[in-house]
Length: 314
Image 1 (tube, helix red, strand yellow):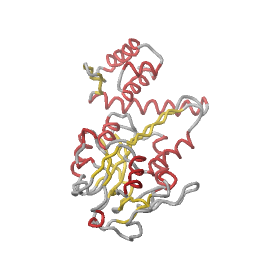
Image 2: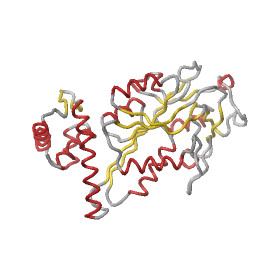
Image 3: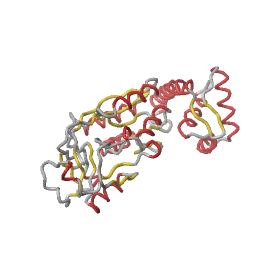
């Protein structure tokens, strides 16, 4: 077993196809396939399932990849110590629901660890994909929320995928609306007041279950519904249509503009926002740094003032 073989396996698991992984690794597809076969034979396990539709990690492969990442991380530490800080390309990936503080922390991570060569990935994506990304170890960290409605279902899925949830903070219900919205001057908004306006939410694809919704009170009936895939579109529609979405209330003016505000919603409930990790994985230096950066924007559910950032609103 060599470090190169471990890098090959990790790349294939992250990319999802042998062909594309070979292109990115600058080796031929047969050479990559043979290297993985030799590693599987030496270890006595099948790391990948191979079908006509492509490849996927086996259960043994998931466990093996967790250990492989730890070995590669330790090797990177040795290279940094004895070859200098520019040894090797740093890699890190986080998958998250659509939270501004997750983006801010990612920016801080790059500012601290960005060098001549790095390969970082921030995936603002659907809830099910966040879970799969961490389960398949494409991402080291996944950020999502639990509440009384979805907790039992999400925890069952996490347990089956050998994942753990770690709480960050608890948020109370807010609505995001335009600063020029007819309800913008209200200290608290009720669901009855929101009835005439379009409700915006993030579309969850083929796994469009209420349990995977990014918005609290996902089962509430609303007359006007619009589903989107990205944050910029959602905020543009909030402004253009006097729409609203129900959320944690954490908003960053630098990222989302000054035209969006967060107003408390007169509804009981909470969002326990946190991150998920793989039980078999060991948190890397980059992962720990990212979590520390998150802590700079989170304090008992209230965002902090940080240099270079506008005050975040609740």
